[in-house]
Image 1 (cartoon, rainbow, N blue to C red):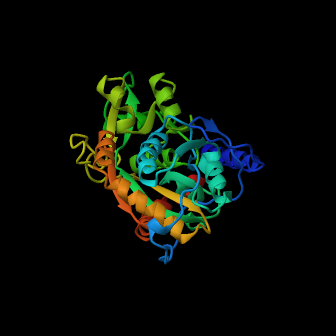
Image 2: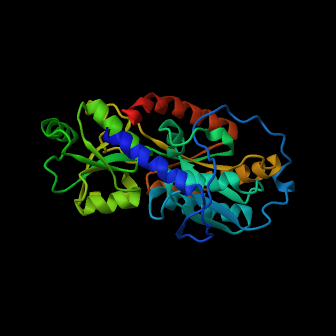
Image 3: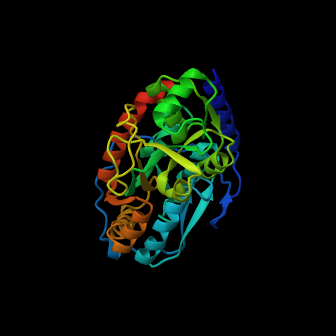
Length: 348
């Protein structure tokens, strides 16, 4: 089947990438060494008896926030926004480093193999768990020291371009059923967009053509150029294109409307239940000093309670929501249990 072949190709890419390349400490994208990285759910970390945050001599150097995707997408933009406020809290330079490749696993590997001193931090979202669910890797989020959750994103929408022969989700379903395999769903193999494409086929009873066109920035470019037909995207990321009519919103992939954009109808309201919110988290290499982790999570909490951060996140329709390492991992486990039901779709 087409999906099995695509997964196999990406697995081969991931294996090849594990020979590693040099990293970067600038906002530009860069490759990085890989090994055995880790996403997905697992038991919550034990409560640590950390020293008071103010007693820890940390940070002592620049903190690198590793984003395992290309620049320009929502993850990259959210990381840069978060880093700006984190820098104020920690009193140290915080830089975002894009380490793309193999569905995000190269960047995740780089964090796992880094020195566990709190100066290398993974910033990622729900997609981190899908690499294990889709079979790209065989370990879970407990391979890291989980630092907590900072943002919740209930803005995932299905979008098509202005010249598509369908303008609503029911019209898309009708067209796709009449034209099996003709509608191209642009996604990135093994990740969140891949899952959404598979789930869309399942809930609508259609057969679409799932094609790997890259991450969020690449998907946006492909849809703008009419090189693909339907994508999932974050509403705030492409609001200008929805506003000017280049993109048409087919529905918010959620059970409930987002109170920050209450006029957006959900896919569930239209009879197709899809619930694909995202949460953004930070994690450090296993073995990080609990006192350092505590200092970092205290800074995370302060950022999430900063009114300026809350307002800036709200401009992208994001919710600032702090969850400590234990609560955050429990939440991740709950999300994982919801996502794992789709595991068989990746191998169909």
